[in-house]
Length: 298
Image (cartoon, rainbow, N blue to C red):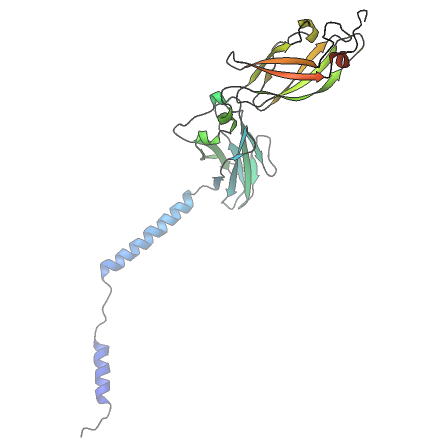
């Protein structure tokens, strides 16, 4: 029987220790170092070339049938204050865009944005004429974002706002080809003894094109002079807007009919065309209640 004294185990451990370890191939180590260097370089390049300001735009918001708004969020990514300004684009068929920002601003519309802070611009457009608004077409409309340090060169960032047709409010689908007069108020009456009585009528245009006022049609038997002269230049009622139209009448006159309500018809045409439109307006229960009883000697 062989006596165990531990020498066999020691020899086995020695043999294992003397066995050379498998080394990582040289090409693999060089490749790993190259990958690390490339990734580090790309991250550093991105950091150095990243704009100090980031801009994001929210989906369009339709305030009413005539107005669209876009919220533009501006954030300062740098550790220094940045002077930021957003210039909205002009879009055919819309009034010049308004720029409203939350926070204090300067006279030219720019904002001093502190380090790592954020502000919001609201860009708003209102339809001027649906006939000129953009239909489906290539390309997006874009705003220009200008930024830079308080002292130094300014940089410019292009911010895409989306397709123009997606910014067109619903009025341009409802009545895109004509204006549409609507009575708002007939309550303003001015009367001075010995002078014509003035009645102011407020009209709103609820259509998609501007309206031009052409005059008033009076009851049968009345003359054009009873409603005063035609205004020059003819008043225009903008899309979605209002216009006051004043008519002058002879107080205590005898040329208006005695029976029936006092009614006039306002005549309009759609801008850029001869398309007529009219609005019947009831001024009072009778002409006598409005102008007074007929008095030939007044």
